Image (cartoon, helix red, strand yellow):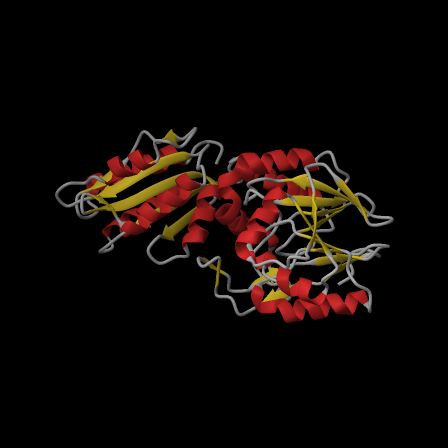
Length: 387
């Protein structure tokens, strides 16, 4: 793939992977992106996953056409991008590896490096000339590892963005960018919104015309759309108006209450209502929706004096990723001692800027007329005028 006259794509598509990072379902696989800049001196931007070293080196050799690379720039040491560093050096031992001090600390932890390896340790803001291209290194600590840096090519106005602006899915499958990019961002980077905001501020000072991430498609058009999404996600603002109802039910009674609430919300004119069975649906998709919409209803059965395990897992995912700036309502069920609302409220107490609905719903085993009335009142409260 030709990105500019001098920049080529040499990444790979992975349709073998079932769980990315051991937890995220990726039905359309993953792309591990790598790039080469062909100039007086040649720079390779990152490697790929361990299972695709041979294919990647073949892609690189095809673009080099007999030349040898001068630099390997390592922006991120996570193994899906760094696994082939040693293999690369076996093929091109004279190459200089470029990274920051933390990069090389991690590199030595992952690998037994050749004693003769050439190193170039760069600092934040430093540059590297390849001839007509100049690379500017911008540190992006904790987006989402501490050694991460991004690289700006001021000649072609290309930002090599490491894991930023990435998404799930291989490049040979067409799918909507936003859905899988949102799930990717919230799941993997979502905890580090402040650090992403800092990087966006740095990016705003650059004339970026192309974004080359380490996962997902190269972004060449309407960059404002992608930057706006990242600004929304990293500042923890709701992306859309709507109500997500996340429920955990054992015998179906809590589910019936959640479904009744969804029906009443729709009847009241609320345009977007998402109902999620936490025990059966992809947890990462559920977490994505919780961050996407501005209102959330947590509906859980009381279980061993606590809440159902999948609800606890769900709330832990939210709090780990700094859930905030939303309205939250509660529904609970308990035959002899309903405790779910107390537990769920306690789990959220460290979250910032949450507004709690005045109306809550308590079931004593099953939905009864008084329960229906409470659900109707909650639906009325949640379906605010701006809906």
